[in-house]
Image (tube, helix red, strand yellow):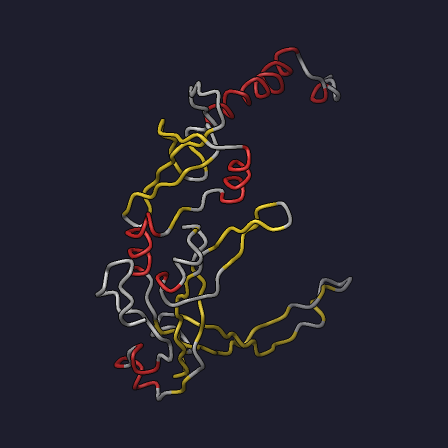
Length: 252
C-alpha cells in the first residue's frame, strides 16, 4: 500500500536542490546585473556616463559607480565635486544637458511627426449566456447590440466613419533650483520645439520628454480620407527643422 503522505515529505535532496541552491544563486544574479566599477578615487566625485539615444551619443555626469546605470554606461572620466554638488546631482539623476547633447534632441524631434487618427465605431450582435437550471437547460440568455469605438491610424480599420483628428508631439524639459535649503526640479511648459525652452530649462530626460496633444475633430466624407493630409487640418504650430542649429529659431 502506498504512503499517502509521501508527497508531503521533503528529502535532503529536495531541500538542497529546490530551496537552498536557488537562494545561493541570488547574489550572483544580482552582482551580474549591478556590477560596480573599480574606481579608487577617495574624494567626492561624479563620473561621466554615456549612452546612444536617437542615433546620437548622449553624455551626462552622475553620482554612481555602477557600470550600467539608468540606461547609461560608466566611464573612468570624472570631476571632483562638493557635498552640496552631490545633492544637486541626486536631483538631476539621469537627465542630461540639452545644449551639450543637441544632436539627440534634434533627432528626437525629427522622428516625431504629426499624424492623422481616424475615429471608428461599429456594432456587433452579441449573445449573453444565462444560467443552467437543475434540469440542465439554459435560462435567461439574451442577445444585445454591443458598440465598439476608438481611434486608429489605420484608414482601413473597421468602422472608420470620416471623423479625424491630428496627434501632435509636444516637448518639455526641467530646471533645477535651490529653494528652502534643497534642490528641486521644475518642469517646463510644453512647447513645439526644444529650442524654445532649452536656455531656461536646460535638463532633459530622454525617456520622458514628449507628450501628445490632439486637435479638434473634423468630419469628412469617407471618400475624401485617402487624399487627406495632416497639413489640411492641423492647427498646430511646428518648427522648421530645416534649421538644424541649436540657436536657429526660424519657424518657431
